[in-house]
Length: 597
Image (cartoon, rainbow, N blue to C red; front, side):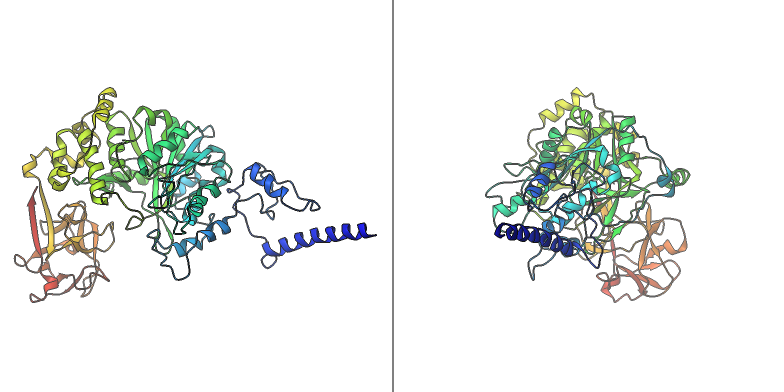
């Protein structure tokens, strides 16, 4: 009798466990949808099953199965718990840790729906089915758990079979880490190195970011024993990769539908191609996913700072006929690209003497083009990226010095005599030690790489003004005291403002020529012919809305027909506007400073 009571008690407890579990995961009668990309490894699943009461009969929960009961969550990664354990403390500034709004990010699931920004022709196009596998490499440092988890490309299951492994490598892991970072490797079709800063104090909680992610199928975590930075961490991830193709991603991305096939197909057709997706924008404040124009390519000015620039009118017209066609680009942004593994190794991987971050995209872009390869942006592939205004981690020696050192290494190896134009644009760079470059020069000779003049003639002819002697290179800025007219990183059909003058050209290079105030291919334009209208950047079209003249030196800049002058009084809230001309107003007085570099 007593034995029967015990059995009945055990049986009742088991059923109570099942009922409580189902009540917890049910919400108004509907079960939550697990992210089926985040399956646990078989060993982890088996451990969880063993921990349950023996009297409970469980359904089969094979990690590899595609028909797993969606109500069973123990064979999936505990996404909610993982994010909450790295969440904000009460009253904590949501921008403090990551320099983006972590609170907004943490509210979003890893498999949230994002808009398909591809053209209709891209959506209809069929891709090859014999594509090679890829290893995805993600490097991270001071990354929010929620953004890191959304970078995992298995959220898009149609691409899952092409992903062999994923390697996640934090920039730095270990006791005494000034940034609280760590490294992990994840088996997937990409290897990547990441470092993350965790405000939770203990080293154990810091290391848990990688240890927990390593439970997910295909994920491997690679630990760095000291801070290595982006370039060396990426190389470590690439060395550990097992697939024939490498896919590099930043740690705050979201891969859109069908993102991988177009990239792999281009590399499969020609292993010397290095290809990048169109990089959409994820707002750092709201985490809204915003589609970017597919009519952009990467470029740079003589300060060697990357910028997006519009294709020429002829190229845009050609793209209307076939919006799926690849776009040749002089430079890639560097954070997101796909490359054949053997070709990556043959080309010399990354410059291992570059530190932390910056300049590596410039160096690999020059190297690919000058050594026989090509760079392309593939418009049928889209990946969102969180663009932030500041780095969430420190640079030993200061970010400016690190960036200048890395950039100078690239210029000294690949730009030949044209490096003088860089030094003319950024004079301080000449005083930054750049270390030994003998091995990179030897690589350049061994690969029979072409000259920088060839690059200018064949890849980036828009910079042919370099034919002028260095002493004749000129730069123009539109000044108001110590502030200068600045695009603020905005593109065509956007407003602009003023920013502290930095004398390096780039976004602050504006010319008054033939009654047009020009920045490359865009002109300062009236959007409406009335007082208070914000000024816009629009492609130069010789219309009256784009014509201006300076009434006097260091004075008013007036519209060619209307009594409206350029005014900066509301630059913090509305950008530059046009107002009734007032020669006594300091916010309407401008000067054009032309500097010989």
